[in-house]
Amino acid sequence: METIIDIQHLSKSFGTHEVLKDINFSVKKGEVVCVIGSSGSGKSTLLRCINLLETPSGGEIIYNGKNILGNRQNLNTYRTHLGMVFQQFNLFNNCDVLNNCILGQVKVLKRSKDEAKDVAMKYLKVVGMDRYLNARPGQLSGGQKQRVAIARALSMQPDALLFDEPTSALDPEMVGEVLKVMKELAQSGLTMIVVTHEMEFAREVSDRIVFMDKGVIVEDGTPDEVFNNPKHERTKAFLQRALK
Image 1 (cartoon, rainbow, N blue to C red):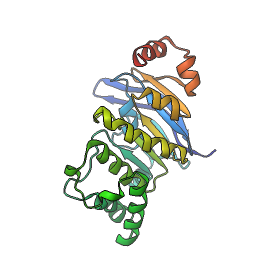
Image 2: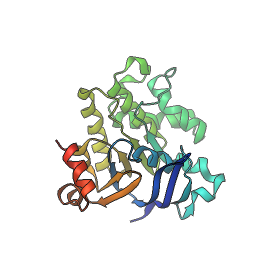
Image 3: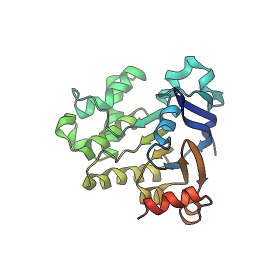
Image 4: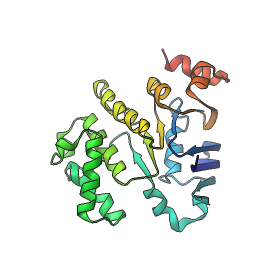
């Protein structure tokens, strides 16, 4: 299977505080990788380094055989190949649902308005939001906003989609509708890296689980290996708390 992203010896410090230490892992095409761990373990920083919202302090991110960190001119192109879904949706409040999914395509990918609209409609249908084309974000529930944010990311037709705790800002009754969409995307063969605290989702949907603690990857294996037979005491302690 083709490797989409290969991360080697990645580190990130904020001042003297080292948040990521010597991170090594890769993601293959069609793989769903869930990153779990306590708050402050470095999970979201890792995701933000992967799509360069944060600049890593050291190491390499190999994409299509090239180290992106040593190849600055291709950063914007690289970013268009990685979709990002945030905790807080990050929708454009002054645009309706349809235009939220069209804008990036027209501006960044230089698609025509008609083509962008067709692509947007396709993905709004996938997430079940095609009935709300003219609604503004302020008129939507949290779960609906997050589904629009997923459709917007999909409309860029990225190689992989990164999710940063996509359900953590939602009311409990809305979590299910977003996880259902994500499960369907995983089953469709989309490459996904998901930072999540939804353990049942991670267990059910992942090909691989990465457990992080204090800025390092402690464990990396199948859901069965990590949940049912963790090798490290830190993993065991985290799972005992998380699976209560």
